Image 1 (cartoon, rainbow, N blue to C red):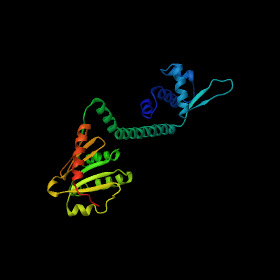
Image 2: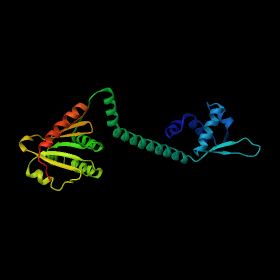
Image 3: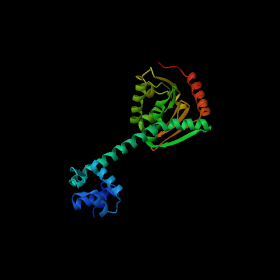
Image 4: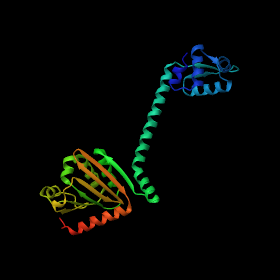
Length: 260
């Protein structure tokens, strides 16, 4: 009559059958429970021990008499369900933590896999969150970051994300060399930058007609398109491509005037 309700509350089938019998029939001996249910004596004793541990029944023993079992007040069933819910929530939280850990570690695992299999790793991202993920990946860099960036596009279309990223980079002390278009606005923008972790050099404005960015770091290349209605990022992990782009950047960097 009530077994489905009891199993829905967190009991297994054997526990539910024994508890239902005790709820309806009052105190009983284990042998009588076994005779009046479909369960063998061994399963009945096992269910009784489990139900007692859950405080759903009590065991009464008297000298020289066979023990009897009595159901506790049904309100205790609610406590069992609440306990199950709490355990499920804790398990869910643990799964979330493990997933977050995996997501943080996955780029390193992909890197190891690609290097061992001699494959270039290519990942594609879209939207603000995609740009954020690619930017934040640079914060794990073990090398100085080389960057081409359109400051105007960043300020118009990615200001909040870039501001958060810049604060985290400064806190972590991740160093960066940046090449930007030589404009009055850009020189003003970088006037108060942190010179201990960031170096800036300026390229003639006519050579910089694109609303995009490039990050070169730690064996990786990331490209970002930063226009308002079209935000994408591509992350490439390949040693040869990285070394080539790194060389191009360093060649251009050395040709530009230092700025202090």
